[in-house]
Length: 99
Image (cartoon, rainbow, N blue to C red; front, side, top):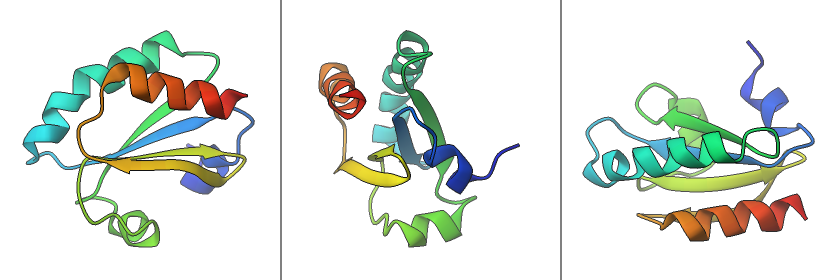
């Protein structure tokens, strides 16, 4: 399996969802994130990162609340937002990153 750094340096935008299994808003976002992953397959990628199992990444990206969404393009964070976000907003931000 590729490392996180290799994945985010890809040519397609990556939506990363930092979440926790105990987080209610994270659970509410799960179907939205999964739908986006299916709908944008081939143009963007979606990753879910459990903050309790990935403390190093959580600290590296200064995740202080969940859910937190980051969009990476070419290894750089191009967008970041925490909290519950509607599907259309997430899709629009991914499309903005596609160019």
